[in-house]
Length: 351
Image (cartoon, rainbow, N blue to C red; front, side, top):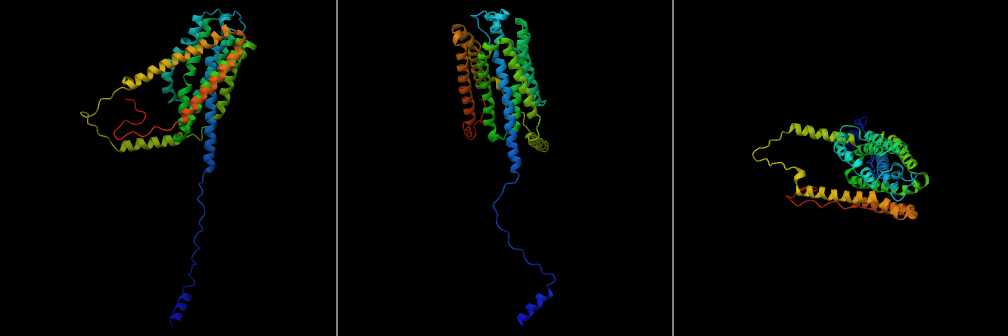
């Protein structure tokens, strides 16, 4: 009887019977979107390479003057000081204040300007500007005043490179990879300085005017190539950064913060903190030492040992490129700072 009931119930419900599907097979977990991730990594390398080339041109054009001077010779074909009748004091001004004065002032405004304009376009335009100024020194430099004017133009244009470059890198690389990208970008400084030192060999062959013209032309080419790569900004992380920033603004707008003015601590200017003053002082000493070596090392050796000038310039370039690049890359590999103790200042805070 029980069997008959079961059979009857099955026959009556056969029209609505739906077989149970077999349990799904377990398959390995696969991360989708890998192609886009690989494309972003490739795009990041393109941006880093373009910015590094711009920085190489920056340092090459900036220091090229130091490789075209010899006060122990009157050869106006090879040496700019002999051709323009420059004294050692004139040369010192061209190598330092004529460039550095406007560079320092413009650097203060460049950071704020980069936040308001397209950083990629600013980098390319600046590279083209200082490259043209470099070529103009060779083609139209006929006095101290004209060379000083072109050096000043170099200083204004080159002040854009660092803030624009680091801004683009911060929008391109994730925080876990940003330190390595910044260190690779900083290594371009040493490579550009090394090329300037090695330009002693070029100066010996084609003269100082052609040397400035060729290096300026290379800079214009770098600007053109970089413009082609930096113009494709579709894979930058700027959109995600903007969205996160808008979310933070929305949250802050919805959640008002009440501050008791009586208990509010007085804000202390970062420039007045001892650590900041010490940092600025040591940076000033570092740049004074660096400029002294860069401005006078090659001319002094070239005057004392004219027959070995090319060998010294190339050897000096190898040392600068190898040691400077290694130091920059190692900084990017340094382990992160340990988290602060409970109640201590945040990482990187200046006390």
